[in-house]
Image 1 (cartoon, rainbow, N blue to C red):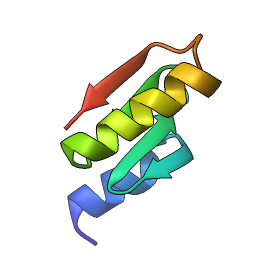
Image 2 (image 1 turned 180 degrees about the vertical axis):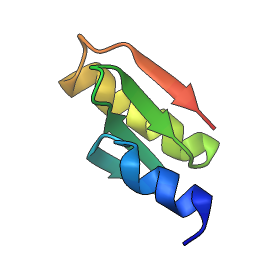
Image 3 (image 1 turned 30 degrees about the horizontal axis):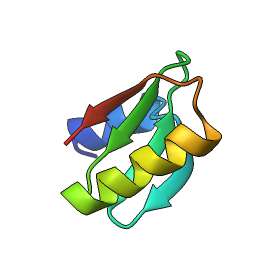
Length: 63
C-alpha cells in the first residue's frame, strides 16, 4: 500500500454536508468548515446557500 493512501485512511477528512456541482462543503472533525473545489459559479451557489441556511458558520475556501 502506498504511504499516501495509508495516510489518507488514518486522517479524518470530515463529513460532507452538501455538494454544489464540483464544490463540496465539509465539516471537519475540529469544528471548522471548508468549501473545496468547484468552479467559480459552484462556489457562488455554495456561498449563497451558506448565507441562507448556515449563516453562523465561517467557511474556509480551498480551491
